[in-house]
Structure formats: structure tokens, C-alpha cells
Amino acid sequence: MDVGTEIEARRDRAIAALVGIHASTICPLKGDYALDEDALASHVSDVMIGADIRGLLINGHAGENAQLTPAEQQRVIEVVRAALGPTAFLTAGVYSENSLEAAAVAAAAEEAGADALLVFPPNGWALGQDSDAVVAHHQRIAAATRLPLLIYQAPVTAGRMAYPVATLCALVALSPVAGIKEGSWEVAAYEENRRATKAVRPDLKVLGSGDEHLLVSYLIGSEGSQVSLAAVAPGPVVALWNAAQVGDWPRARAVHDVIYPLVAAIYRQPPGAFATARLKACLKILGRLRDDRMRPPAQPLGPEEYRRLETALRHAGL
Image (cartoon, rainbow, N blue to C red; front, side, top):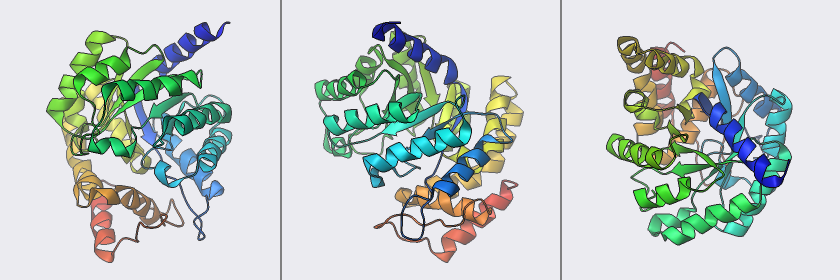
């Protein structure tokens, strides 16, 4: 099989796999802030057991990709692959402020066993972006690997980081692209982006991944989600998805009502930058994580945060 044919085959496999709920997992740390590989293996195994989770997103925002070195990001993939075996579908995040390093991270992710890559925009683009540079960034990453790409659509609140519709359409026209993690976090933007990109690529998987409005995303239309909420509450998130897939909207609304206080406590309560710390705190409260520390400058959560999360977890039946 020549390289071009292999790239197309891997893209098509990703398109087939990117349905349903894919959990975005966290990255446990030891007391000295080093990777806790045993806790990581236990965490991802726990997420994949007992609910119909179709795959994982590792080294995403919940996995603290910006706080990990390239070598650590590669090691995370190796640990997760070893824990879950060859059949689990793993999407690995790729983040860097420069395209050369991002391409190297992508190549290392393929070597470590990833099945697809989610390309995060450089944080500097929150100040402004150029469409040609955005496309060139993704092209350079694509040239470094045979893996399919997913586009990350940032929240509308993230400065100018969210791609305009025209830029999104240019990105999904790239051959290796299999889908979009649509995290606009705003329903009107989600629908506009979905309609525009599906017109360019009908086979594209547009994953409604705003944890706060999954119900509405599923009503509008979605092939699935990559969400960190599923790392804490995989069962309820899958139940919401399953109810939506069969058009049981009363059941979907009931599940949404049960999990919404937890969603709000993790993501909507300011500051939003605390979301990953709250995810780790939830897992610690539930006895699924020994240590919920994050690397500095992130600070430990206060007691009021823990009380709020405990109440929300009880409401969600967890």
C-alpha cells in the first residue's frame, strides 16, 4: 500500500470510528508533579469499563497538554495504548506555538500508537489569526504523519482563536481531515459551522463537544462528542447520547436535567480555567484518583469548590 492510499485508509477508519462518546481524559500527577503512569493506566481503564465509550481523547485540554513536555505527551500515549490494547481508538492532542514542534509531536504520537490527531490552535491566535497561516500549520502537521487529523474549533469566548467559517471550510477540505471537535460553546455558532463544513465534506464527523449544551447539539445534529465530562460521568453522558439517537427526547431531557448541575459546577462556574482542576477533584471525591494536583501556576481548589462538586455529584447519582 502506497503512502497516499494508507493515509486515505486511516482517514476512512477514523471517520467510521468517530461516532458516539469519546472521553477526554485527565493526566494524573505524583507529589513531585511527575506523570503518575500507574494512575493514568487505571484512570483510562476505568473510563472505558462499564459504559459504551467509543474511544478516548488524550493530551487534550483536560489532559493538560500545554503543561506537558513533548516527551511526556508521547509517554502518555504509550501508557494508554499499553493499558487499553490495540483496538481502542485513541485521538491524541497536538499543541504547540510553532508548527515545527507541532509536526514533531504529531510524528511522535503516531510512533507511540495514536489513531488520530486533534490539532489545537496556538494560544497566540487568540490575539488574531491569518487564514493562510492556519491552513499552513495544519498542512505541516499532516505532512509529518500518516494519521488523520481533527480540527479543534475553539469557544467563541476564546478571543479570536475560533476559526471563521471560511477558514473552517478551507481546513476540512484538506484530505487527511476526518472531523471537527466542535467546541464553540455557543449553539448558533455550532449549527452554522456544522452546516457549512458538512456542505464541503458530507462524510465529515462534526462532534458536538460543548459539555454544557450536548442536548441541544444532539437535537441539531451530531455524530458524537469528545468531552471531558465523560471522564467523570461516562454512564450518564452515554445515556444522553443513546436517548438522543433513538429520538427519545423526554428521556434525553431527563438525563440532561440530572447532569446539568455537575456540568455547571465544572465548566460554567467562573473561572473557566479551573475546569481541569475540578475534573480531577471530582475523580478524587469519587475515589478514582489519589492525587488531584496540577502543575503550577494552577492552585489547589478551595473547600467551597469541593462542597459544590460533591453536591453536584450526588445530584448526578454518582
